[in-house]
Amino acid sequence: MSAHPHTPAPDAGISMPGYYEIMETAVRELLIGKGLVRADEIRRMLEVMDSRTPALGAKIVARAWVDPDFKARLLANGRAALEEFGVDFFEGTQLIVLENTDKVHNVIVCTLCSCYPREVLGLPPDWYKLKPYRARTVKEPRAVLAEFGTVIPEDVEIRVSDSTAMIRFLVLPQRPANTENFSEEQLASLVTRDAMIGVVKASEPRKKENVR
Image (cartoon, rainbow, N blue to C red; front, side, top):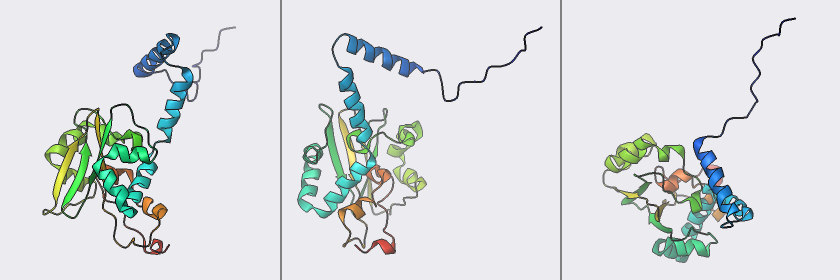
């Protein structure tokens, strides 16, 4: 009786690890094996990183909108103000907060790689890491912003800030109109990740939201 030829079904959801995943595993196991770090320390760091999302940044922006003293501290020393807010930073990393106004619109880029305020926004979006955004934003910021649907008037200055490994930037967007009676939670709901990068503005409230 001849063998019945067939193609084995692939294991669903299983893929071979890539180069960087293999290297990460090897380095991690080496560091643990030499006693330089503990497995629980790595796990806690991963949990901290997973907890950092744009929702945290949105809460910080909302607090700055309602608390002038906190806003002043945030603009004077972003890292110190956020440590006061309970945010932990990697050693040596500095954070500069840039305020958007009627005369100035700020946008953030990293021309070399993908440096980003991960402490408050989590992982950067894919488009932030792509070469077209990194190269074009410094050369033609108005055109790039227009592609995000953000049209900046000619009489408003656009300032592009280039992040580095040690200096990160966070945009403090302008508070939308008709939000005088909003709570901090309501205000935070208007702040998106892209607004804190500077490619869009904070969301306008819906009419039904303009009641506490």
